[in-house]
Amino acid sequence: MTATRQNFGKAWNVLAGMITEPAFDPTAFGTIMGARTARERRRNTNPGSYAERIADSLLMLGHPVLGRRTQLADIEAVSVPMIEAFQRQLAQRSRMTVVVVGNVSEGELRAKLRSFAGLPVGNYTAPVLQPLAPAASPKVLVSDRPGSPTTYVSAAFAGPPVRSPEYWPLAIGLAHLRNVLFQEVRTKRNLSYAPGSHLSSPLGIGVGSMSVSSVYPDSAIEVMNRELQKMRQGEFTEEDLNDSRQVYITGYFMRQMTNGGVAEALLNAHRSTGDWKTAFSYDAIQQVTKASVQAAFQKYARNLQVGIVGPKSGVTEKKYVMGS
Image (cartoon, rainbow, N blue to C red):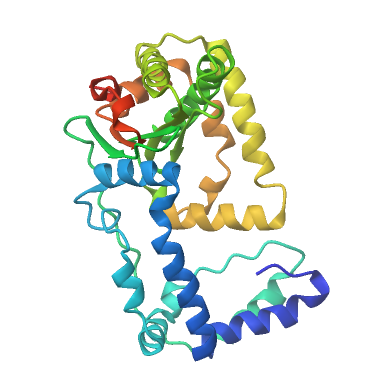
């Protein structure tokens, strides 16, 4: 929740009531379900998102958590009694993590936390998730859309977990690669509006990705593959890497400019690594070197799983075999 200081008490009472005494109005539930099922039916109509989903599905296939994709039938089966039972299962103090950032004293916060005293303690412990296994070989899957003027490409590979010392070298390296792709693919060759690369961390598990949309996909992917190989071979300078790191750090701090941004960072750090201090990783980012970036790319940026959505006639599949 977000509240002004003068309304913090009232807002907290509403939030606590939603957890301790939830109400599930059938009419509101029907409206929400209608919107949610409609969104699921439209999921694959966005070609960029669909290409990303294909790549992620190829990469995560077989993982006990990330490999499970919600289907329309799963959503349609949800009922109010099912939600009520699930909420009762979740409402345990051992499952709760409360992060408050703002002008609130410790004494006031402790008093507010008594709102949850009536909940059972439970015996929940956070599970240790199985790492995402690297793909054994590169794969390419094309969803043919003959009438589309643009082809959308997304490539994914297994990265290190957030708690790994290799996480920040790969994150900074992919941020640098994104800047290079912008210059090489968009600025110099005008092959795409927004090529990109980044490292995400669903549930604390690293996933590296590259993406591009283009009317000349073969040409664009050749450039991207070449630049990926340069990262693996160390064909970039410490100076250029440092420039990209400074841009990354600026965005890193901008995301923590507000109380809400800091609260989100603290929660994500605790949930992903078990240590809220990792929300403030400036020192680790500063310690990233060219050698550590190259090593991370050599280890992780291999056997990319590639999803393509667009006219199959314009795709030479062997050109999309990346990181082999």
